[in-house]
Length: 147
Image 1 (tube, rainbow, N blue to C red):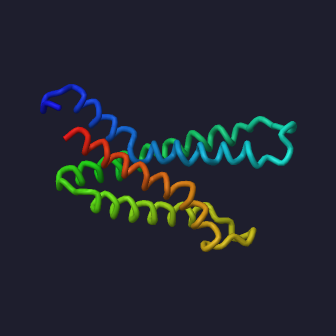
Image 2 (image 1 turned 135 degrees about the vertical axis):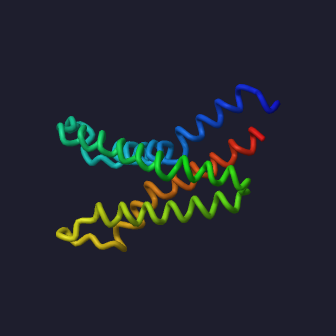
């Protein structure tokens, strides 16, 4: 691919806009929706979400946008500037996934209901951390294809 190829700029912009946090949010939300449909006890009793669910979704999208602007895009730019390989991307992905999952676990756990950090962290890591690692690795793969 030539250095001035327009596809290079499209892939670079896509990486900075959609990876890692928006893609991780999409994958995690997809897992939750699929699990909800498969594990629903009574499929005939489907209730629509209330206004709080809509507002919560909008707030969550704003949090994802902030993470992308202040953490995701700068980390990709730094990894690109240092010409890091798979090891650098993997370390960054796992550290970011652990820190973000820990933060969300602390925020989302309900001590009144007996939820401990040891109970909440694996669930948040499975829904948010694993897709975050996958999206960093996808960003690495896209970078390798452009070069």
